[in-house]
Length: 293
Image (tube, rainbow, N blue to C red; front, side, top):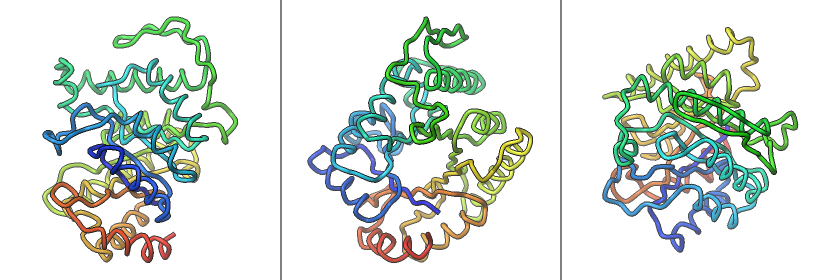
């Protein structure tokens, strides 16, 4: 099992920089930040952009993976995102993790879009396939329903070629069957938040259902499960995973039992969402995670 920690981009860099350093020092394998114009969980909070935040985080860390949680068509064009990915890949020394998803309603509304869910899913599929091409090919031309590209140069890439050491892992967030198929088709890994549930047991039932669907998609595609990452956002469950060390350990055990390779929690905050204490984070990092690796 590998362990991730999300640091929300709500802090000025003078406060955020020590958090990113500490995430690495505490032994987490990867650290993430939300990529939104405005996040619905903290609509009145100060909010900073994900890409420059991760570039700055790369400059104050040496080992830890750094990822977007997640980038979406709501606020990115595939061609421009490709350029940002190449920069983050280079600045971080190959530590960047590209998390992508269909995105939420708030960013779309702020940017003046009002697509029905079916069209948003279709746009995400087109976005993902074009982005994957941009990260594996050069001189890319495409004419789609939502995006066009004209002989796009991808220098200094491509960076998702045969050399595994140079690949930018594409982590595709998906819950629905079609998007899970897309994650298996195009992604290096799959990510899920499970879904909305009133109880922890209901939430874990959703997660288990999604995991079974991934198993089926991998089998149908003839793809080996052993080379495909599975990331679970623990903190979409009703109970925050860092409520206590025991809660975190139980959640990791259940995730492992469902075949997840990676779990992600959030830096605890003084107020909701993700309300918790630094003491629990320290115990999890110093005691629980080393025992569960």
